Amino acid sequence: MQRILLIAVFLVLGYGLWASPDLKEIAAGVALFLFGMISLENGFKAFMGGALETALRRSTDRLWKSIGFGIASTTLMQSSTLVSLVTISFVSAEMITLAAGIGIIMGANLGTTTGAWLIAGLGLRVDIAAYAMPMLVFGVILLLNRSRALKGVGYLLMGIGFLFLGIHYMKEGFDAVQEGFDLAAYAVPGLPGLLLFTAIGMAVTVIMQSSHATLLVIITALAAGQVTYENALALAIGANLGSAFTTALGGLTANLGGKRLAVAHVLFNVMTAAVAVALIGQMAWAVDQISGWVGIAEDDFLLKLALFHTLFNLLGVVLLAPFVRPLERLLIRYVHFAPPPAEQPRFLFPESLKTPATAVTAVRNEVAHLYDNAHGLIAHGMSLRRRVIDSDASLSQAVRQTRRIMPLDVDDIYETKIKSLHSAIVGFIGEVHAREISEQWTERLYDLQQASRAIVEAVKATKHLHKNLSRYGVSPSPSVREHYDGIRVQIARLLREIGQLRTEEPGAVTSLSLDSLRLGLERSSMERMNSINRMIRDRQLPPQIATSLMNDEAYAHEIGEKLIDASRVLLQSDEPGDRIADERLALDEGDIERIARGSKPTADAPGETTP
Image 1 (cartoon, rainbow, N blue to C red):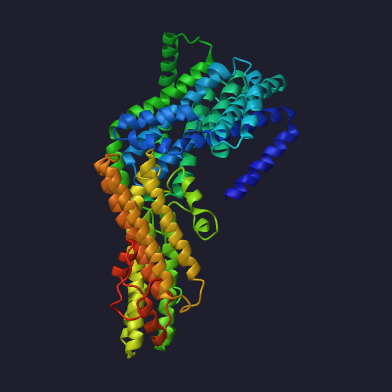
Image 2 (image 1 turned 180 degrees about the vertical axis):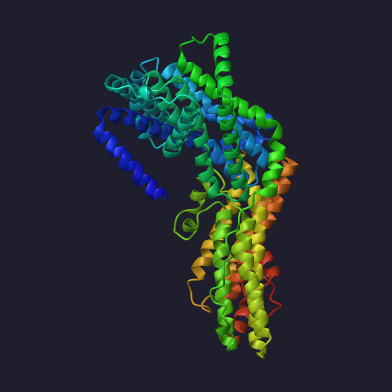
């Protein structure tokens, strides 16, 4: 559907550019304006580095704070889309409440009206193209630097420059169109015109994915006399209504919380547009009255349009604000989305029950399938792409470059990709036990069942760790962030090393290799715990953060232990003799701890040795 729509837009636009040379300037102006907005977003992202996320967490404990944050951030970045999508990601990660997210969305809608004021009050009254050229020149020079901060400044300058150029070309294009023919002659009066131009404004915003760009088109067309003031009001209502489409698209990829926020955004915009359409006469009268009070000339339709845009968004906020909590409860109660189908086993089929050997092989393969799913979930839980862990890229560098923690609904993934497979494995093993099999195979099935259980426990520990990682993983405190960076690198490195061992044939990897991984895990955990205790003694950490660090250290240690336990079972040989020899080489937990502390293992048990 999206591809068909894109092709249709290209065909219509291509015909328009061929048929009307004046349309080229208008289209170029819109393109430059949109590119300027993209550059501005890139510039602000270079400076965020967790700052936006930190401000978001601290500014949502009250509704008025949430609305104020939405207004301020959208006014600063001139992109309600960026603010809305970041808000969806935070609601998805359960870092802010749904009510707080609704408040930010309302504030973002109000903050986006500042763009109309800037364009109407400055953009079309000053020759801003003269200011655009120097900004583009200096912006490109700064982009050639390696410094991330200087590149961010370069993107900001280029963004403003392209915005100015876009406004200039839009104005020139509509002035040229006016000399050829008058589009205002096709104005539709009354309610039909109101509904028609509202739909047009919505459609244009959906296509351009930017209410700012739509408002630029509306204001420049109004300034050139190509649309009437009444039709421009309807177009502004439609632009506001269409802006919810982008948020709705972002909500499709979010979890249930993000989807509920996207629904709230659509409801808010639809309600605001409905009120504006129903009270269009009264609102136009209010705009005339307020214009007289603040000194806007009676025939200054550009500023009156900006005032109208602000007024009906403000009315929507005033009407909805008292009902945010009830709306939150209704969304939680009634908005549900069908969960994705649970992943089906790949190897557990009735045919595998014919012999103990085929049954054990099937279970081993299914446990490996379960491990692969857990590997991806834990990697994302550490806010790292799986392809990064599976590559030779520097894990430390990937962790240091993290600007935000990936939102992750561990519960959803656990239900569909972990619990379903674990249940199937347990059920299949029960069917095998119902048949007459030897003790050798019974023990092997028991080990595989324990390995499956260890994978499940590693995922559950990841859920708890990810919750605090989302709060403190990009902490402004260097010591706190360094601690979580260490946890993330350790788990990622463990996933990589186990992945490399799993490329070997079963039985080719000895317990000594896994003992080495466990020893590294133990040493790293001890070093971080010593660091936490030192910071507590030096009063460098608040007690509540110190407690979180200790808990998360325990979760990280549990993840590592369970992954190693599961890997030991998956990598060991099915031959009894090989397993006995391998077990004699293995170190027990006491030996691992003593070596990690700098001592040597005891020699009580025969066959034990230091790796």
